[in-house]
Structures are given as C-alpha cells and as structure tokens.
Amino acid sequence: MTRRSAQEQRAPGSSGAYGLEIRGAAGAARLLVEARAGWPPLRIIRRSGPVAASPDVFGVSHAELRVRGGGGRIRIDRKPSRAVFTTPTRVSDDAFAHPYLAPVAAVVAYWLGRPSFHGGGVVVNGGVWGVLGERDAGKSSTLAWLARAGYGVVSDDLLVLEGTTVFAGPRAVDLRADPARELGGCVELGFVGQRERWRLPLDGIASELPLRGWVYLGWGDRVEAVPIPVSERLQRLDPMMSLRLPFVRPSLLLELVSLPTWELRRPRRWDSISEAADSLVQLADSR
Image (tube, rainbow, N blue to C red; front, side, top):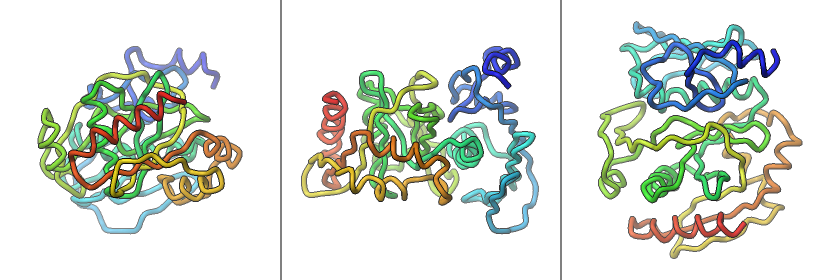
C-alpha cells in the first residue's frame, strides 16, 4: 500500500499512538494522538470472561501475552492486524491506553521492523531525547516533572522508532504515590496492572518527532551528567529493548548508538529532581 492510499483509507479524525492507528477504542481517543497518514491500523477488541493461565507466545503470525496484574490474555494477530484483550472484567479505556497498549505496540512494532525501548522521551528544541534506565530509576517521575515545567513528553513507558523518528505515545504519565503527591495535579486511578497508579495528564504533542540523543537515569551522591563512550553504548542500549529478541535492523542500531549519550545521576531524594531535570535540558540544549 502506498503512503497516499493509506491516507485515503484512514478515517477522518482518526487517533493512535506509537505509530499505529488505533481502531475500535473510541473511548480512549482523548488519551491518544492524531494518527498520521501511513500509520498501519490496529483493531482493538475487548472481551470479558475466564482465561486459562499459559505462558507468553511470540511467532511470525501471532503473539499471546499475559495481562500483568488482574489476569487475562492478549492475542495479537499480524494479519489482519488486531489485538484481542480477554480479561475477567473489561479493560477500561484509561487502562487500555496506558499501560496495556504498550506491550501490544511493542510486538506490532517488531513485526514492522521498528525498534522499541522501555523508556520515554522529552522534547527540547524540537527534538526528542530518549529517557532510559533500569526499573525504579526515576524515569516516570523525571518525565512528569519536565511535563509540569512545560516540556513536551512523547511517551512514558515505551519509545517506538522508525529510523530516527520517534512516535508519540498516550497522553499520560503514571506515577506512584510519593512523586504524585509531590507534583500535585494527578488523578488517582487505583490498582491498574501490577500497582496503584496516579495519572498526570499530558498536553498534546506532534505525532512524529526526530530523535536527538539518549539520557540514562541513575542514582549517585550528587547530580552529575557523565558522557557514555561510544564503546559502551551498545551494551547500555541493548538491555533497554522492550522485547528480548534479535534487533530488527542492525544497521539502525549503529546509527542509534552514534547519537549523543549521557548518564544523568542524582541522589535518591525528591529535592534533587529539579536540578537533575535542569541538567537534562541543558544537555539537550547544548547539542
């Protein structure tokens, strides 16, 4: 299908996320972005009912994933492109858009030859800096702080690329109780997925933006930004991939690790986040 024919078949005012046009989830549209011409469609079906426990499956034509927390399964078919959520109770619009859409988008992205990473991104001077880190590295709280400071946040927990173009994710950052209390303005969602969540709504953003570089978050005795040598970047980026599968395009991987890459460290205290976020913006501003 050509890019023009995709545009002609795209429904007016259609919405999406992660580079996919989402169909069958109209109630979640307020949390999504404008679907660009050429974004492949993904049909969403949500059902309620008992689900037998079984391991995850990934193949060339379909995948099956467990719904983390609360039980249930997601079956993802490559052709026709669709995802069927079967859960004990119907997945709400809020939960579908974030966090349950992310694992589906990662699988479809892999089939499309698009890399995806467990992380988020912030926009500085029209370009995206990927914000990565291990679990509990403070990614969501840092992104939420930047959003409250007026910077565009492209996504919270999944970064999907096509080349060095970043696709915007759902318009929300989900936080734990302490950072939500510190930031204010968050909506309590209750228990969603594997934990309790407080949601900070995000402003609208361009559906596609260029990637400029990477920032890894970590903990330290003081706020400091340390450049990561080119020789170490591959081993840092590889564990951040959302799926533990061979990289879809090795040549693109070399391009991604050639971008400016830093580690940003800060103490495990809330009062250090402002200085750390300012340092991140200064890094991006200087490139």
